[in-house]
Image (cartoon, rainbow, N blue to C red):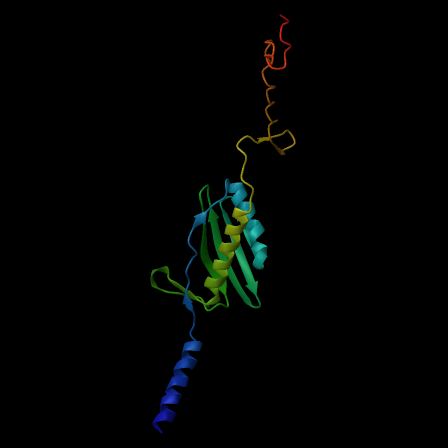
Length: 174
């Protein structure tokens, strides 16, 4: 009888743990931006579709990304400047969002995973961008062109005569 009661208590405990409402939302740590805000914006826009994210709005310095999974919707603010990119939970639909004291948000356990995946995708897109050339300039057509390579100097020539090899020169007759 005791074993049966203990088994029932354990089953109820496991069932309640599996039905928990969610976890505390943890925003990913800020990370380094690309060489320019325009390059960072492009990297973010390139990274969004990798895992089915889309841009809800795009403004200088801020993109609102959203992920729609079945009936669930997650929105994330992606802010960027010259040096950092910051992802922050905005809101969600049908992901058990609860806002507590001090602004703490509790939501479905996948929210943190989805936000971390998006942050990793953006980091990879920024890292994949070519390094800007310090010597590159914009042409009239808006294309980036590199300056012509400097001409290499020809080796210096002298008017001196080449030394003669004493062994090869004929010896004077006596």
